[in-house]
Image 1 (tube, rainbow, N blue to C red):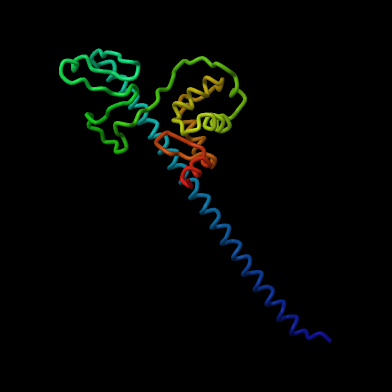
Image 2: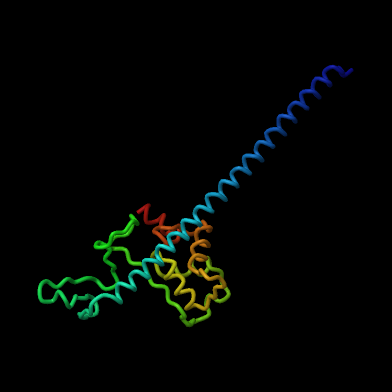
Length: 207
């Protein structure tokens, strides 16, 4: 004959076990919700950082354009170097074309140096093909980065996407590109406003 006291004891133990299990499940749910909130906050901060970097890049492009317009006329030598006409009688200073010299400017942005050059975004460019007309930003950028074999700035990506027939609806297409790439684990930001494929960057670090 089955001992009724033993059955009651086992039932009580089972209830305690189930209650403990339910409490742990509830705590796990709370922890998962907290993790999700933290991820959203991190992503929001990343988006804000990306927008700030793009704003800085845009200001630098405008500043560089203004400096070029105000600069004295320059002689062109071999399509690779420029020499300032005002300095030809003393010491000619050669500078690679396309490289912006920030050493004489009092800038508060710490990462700017004389080697940094922000690509210009082409405005009003007509598409040359329609290869990206039916693709997403991440799909198209994956192809472009693989073809380039190097990291690309969002301005470069924008120019190539427009040339490939992609259309943007918003007023800030480069921000849309940066946000899309930042949210996708396939890409990694390697410099302000500049992205690369994660696998290629990992291969470089391993080598």
